[in-house]
Length: 384
Ligand SMILES: *Cc1c(COP(=O)(O)O)cnc(C)c1O
Image (cartoon, rainbow, N blue to C red; front, side):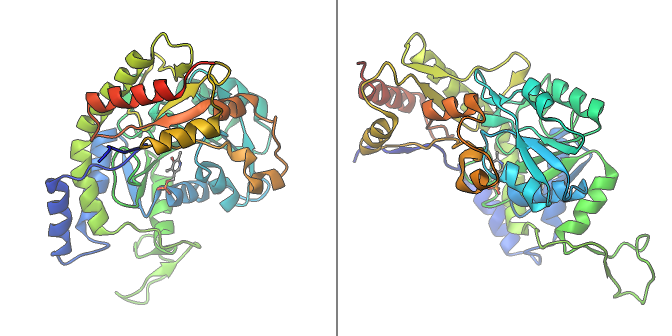
């Protein structure tokens, strides 16, 4: 049978399986010791003081926005080239979304464009470390400090990445950083997410919001009826991760550095194989960055080839290459167009979308797979 490829998938070892099985046979399936163990491991890995494990990355973005007290009348700025959750979390909190266009060389949010979108109502900037490469956090944190704005790093693509020698997730340049552990991401817990922070005030709020806004902390109670007593002090949610998920996370985190090295090797090979071919461009990695690539988008110069994007996509699928496009610019989604955004608003993001296809990138791929994939693409995208 012909080998088929998707753009991403998980790698599950016997060690990962055993870790989950042990938890299944333990006394706690949720709210048990594996959550704390995973959170401590995330802190040790990133260097941040606090971690809050959550049901998914979207819940992490939602709670991060709420912990900052973002509300109606406020504004938040994010990239149009992202998964919609990066923008939706601003709307969940009742605030208004603004986008800032990308730098075409990296597809990362451009700090000069962010500055143009800042108003007296701007309360948060959510830079997205697209494809795994960190945004220019020094410039973004300087802007945020100057205008008294909070920063949430959306690092759903970037666990394991470095920026200026510091781990993404250390929160050196931000108030909070969020991760996603969906199976297509660099490491997985099935569904899952986390918030990293160095701020105790935010950590305390997040812990409450994760479990219905309830606290049992004696220092925080308004009074105390007895040992059973607990209080709901804010309108929280059930956004908890299970212990089986955390057990998988603990095991996957031990493999993360090996995942990252392998993914970087694959991306390097794609660069070599596509080099010097004017039909194709890959995103650039800037010198401050060591990216744990979640994605490897290929930019195709459709002026030079016979097929249009739809035709190319269909033909590649027929040959076993089931790719994806990351992303349809968020401002072009019908829901966002109803909020007033329209085609033409963010020209770099829109041009990027016309050209981009995400290449297969996952740990099971070997150098021969990359050769094979590149060969299929080059043959299918024949020149005019
Ligand atoms: C995957 C992703 C999310 C959301 O994570 P889930 O765990 O799927 O909820 C948020 N932002 C970005 C950029 C993502 O890629």
